[in-house]
Image (cartoon, rainbow, N blue to C red; front, top):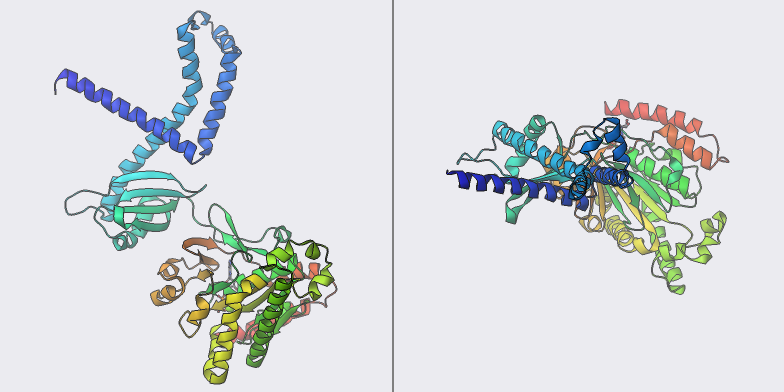
Length: 481
Ligand SMILES: Nc1ncnc2c1ncn2[C@@H]1O[C@H](COP(=O)(O)OP(=O)(O)OP(=O)(O)O)[C@@H](O)[C@H]1O
Ligand SMILES: [Mg+2]
């Protein structure tokens, strides 16, 4: 290479590096990077500093006043100082990425992502997705998604990261790895019970944020997962949060396994615990009757959904008692812990099959606008446990760990529930096409009872129930063992 082409090459490389720095600054703006905002503030303060000639004081102090620039040099000096923090931001991000890229090749080598031609997947992009979550984009290097998934643990160990998801953009041959440097929380609690309103409750959190559930947007919910995952605990905190913040809410809690999970709620107003198959059929039929009445009441007011009624002056003027007695005064929740038992009633008694499926199906189809919601829990996610027609009407799923692929496939349509760590309360939240790994909150029996005792002080001592629960739980555990 002769001297002039060497120089040209150097200039091109320098310009390329400079361009990368500006691209990083631009990307920083796009993703509203906090560090970039800090740099901007620093630039602003430096600008003020120079504008009011405070820098002269420093030159004087170090006895180099003669070096203080003037004329055109002052302009260059001032611009340099003002732009420096922003440039440093761009340089730091670009340097970080280069280092990351280099280490990536070593990692790909270690985990066996080197193809037969001896080349590696190519680094494309690394940027923040959320506060604590990053996205890495690389070319697939000729490896299918299943190979990447298979190397997930080794990638985590070698890169010292926690991978949330590996996705593929098939048509572009790109692999997206969503990860964080921090592990997911292993436990979380509900810090303030009274911070939820309008029938919202806490679904859980990932590394970066909490997720709330809003029944006006997502009317029905499926809770699935194998034993010990946290389904009942999840239902307990859901019921407690809603009953605490919306005391007028109406609950039908179905547990045909004869468990004691729901018995603590029995004493509160508008809360009914059903443990008998006949009771379920009666209850579902009566709710369907209520649904029709509600539909008529809305129609008479020329309203299409219950939220419109909740926004009306008529509703806002109502006392709690009036809300308890008015046909449209509250949302109604049907919570079924282990719905396989419900559909099995049908198996045992074929005349009931049709009735039960029709009733649940009708509530899940029409309940949204009338403010009637279904929450189904299940261990067994097959066709017998959940009627397919009912399942298709449940827009959201919280799926705790399921160890067999078929089970996970039946609930989520993919194998993600099998990949969840064995941590109680860890689940996949599936809302439409979005899937998020969350740690659900734990509200134990004592906390649930304490919160509701506070809200409904007139009710009889629930401490007795707690004792009864503990005794029965012990018996239940003995039987299982
Ligand atoms: N969100 C959570 N965080 C931490 N621990 C939890 C959480 N949820 C449940 N657990 C723990 O796991 C145990 C089992 O939870 P739970 O009874 O809710 O499971 P389940 O899915 O309903 O099981 P089964 O199908 O046998 O009824 C609880 O006693 C509790 O100690
Ligand atoms: Mg349970």
